[in-house]
Image (tube, rainbow, N blue to C red; front, side, top):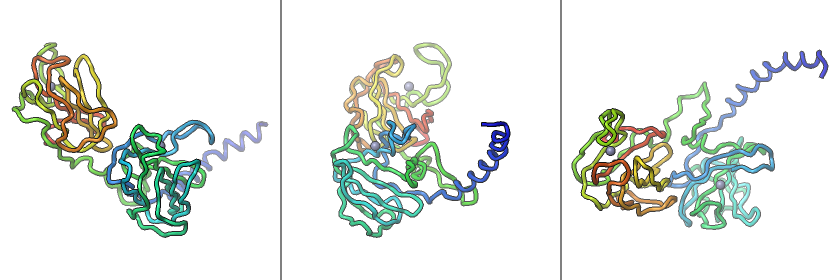
Length: 300
Ligand SMILES: [Zn+2]
Ligand SMILES: [Zn+2]
């Protein structure tokens, strides 16, 4: 590139950026509704570096085979059939398209659908999830975009600066959880001197005084996302109730659920114990909002 053309590029670059930004924002489509009743996310969107590179061109929503799959927005069915042996449904919403797989559909190409209208049922296989899941894709032309940006559960949300402010992600903030065990609160969330280490620090959960072996119940419906052991928390089970809201159950003597398993509210997830840094049997119950520990008693 000679000096003159590089000077031209440098002159044009800010103009291109300025022109492009409002055009992208103006094209922000309306939010999508969730295609399934459950909002438990599996693998997130991970766009490939090249057109044919590895990546994950959509999001996986954990579900059960046979679950009804619904259109995320109004549109026209432009495909309902097999792609590489996988049953796929595609709906054209105008500027963008949504794709659903593996889904058996009763729709025909050209059918008009409303937002939330049933377009098929989820199949258990072929699926690239541990259990069954819906792989939801979002396409603008040939470009894959993050569906979560329109579903309200992602880190990235497209916001029209001239539109009305977006609603907060579904459910976060007004959640109510159920007590995982009976028994008295023996230590609340907040700063305290740790009974074992003697160090003053945040007690990041609520302690319930219960005998060893007491069944511990899930505080709400969700998906098991963690089953671990650590020196501090001992045997722990973590459940995601919706994007941005998780609960964990610590110092357990027994973990009775596996990662990926779906649980209902009040389902037994383990038994109380005193594993990890603990002075005796109790349940250390934690609530994590967007990854940060909050006071569980505000939600019970
Ligand atoms: Zn997927
Ligand atoms: Zn505790």
